[in-house]
Image (spheres, rainbow, N blue to C red):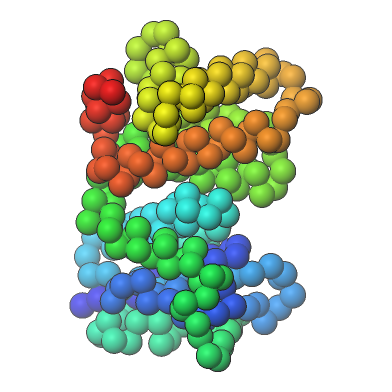
Length: 265
């Protein structure tokens, strides 16, 4: 027996060119709109899983992983709202019946264009998801998964203009990847710059900017929240995004693997 687990996704996810995305045979995302005046874009996710212990957690982790990758690729945070489950006879029926969110209706888009530039972000997320799905649990249970999660938190805080939180979340993401022994900041700057720099000039620039970023983090931790330069925060956000993306692409899922690889450079 199978279970269909339904989730509500709040935030911009599917473009106007795509109304229903088959991520995989067991995972569908469908654009939706509220029948009530809740405002904002929504989508519904349907996951088919075996009816066994912890089925809900397995379904939730699949959607969460997609949402985290979407934030990494697009810089946009989609909030996952937990839904409910119903029996499912076959995966062919996935998404045909709705139980948990009856107050939302499907948005029908005619002439769907998967080649549109607006479709690209969610299709890139689907591609990365399918590449990494087999290793999803390993990734989420390790430090790269922790970095991915805090990058998502930073993206969400940025959307709500909570810049101080963005700085703290990005710092945690960077430390999850590269901090292991003292002096922590010096090793982090060296490892991050070595890992993502395209040449020696960018490497020096990254080390410099990360030093400034950690001084900024210190002032925030000690209570000063004025004068945070958004351009510098965006630059560091891109550094962290590149590092996480490269770690995932290189299948360096644990901190030990990542640091061992970087320290060879």
